[in-house]
Length: 90
Image (cartoon, rainbow, N blue to C red; front, side, top):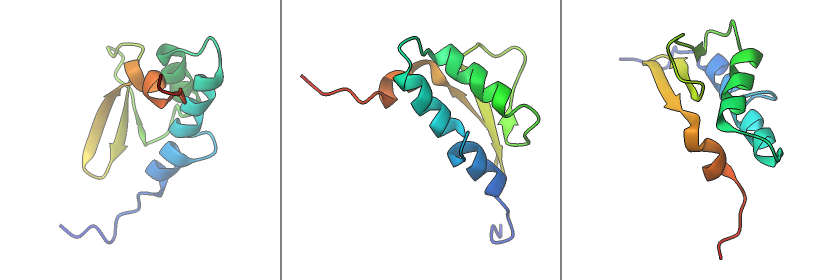
């Protein structure tokens, strides 16, 4: 398999772009009422129609997928905000 001809720029933009998954997650972390469900809702709304986003209508509100050259990878964002929060250990 020769991956040198693959263009992964749409997936990278989806993840790291100005309104990508990471920036949306960071925004939800600083909102006092931010939840995993609202994070995934925003990702779905911001990127609907994107080839990089994979949505199954049967998915839970915290689940989304990313399509890339190897196929679709599904993520459950249930703990994304907790893991991404900048909290100091006790």
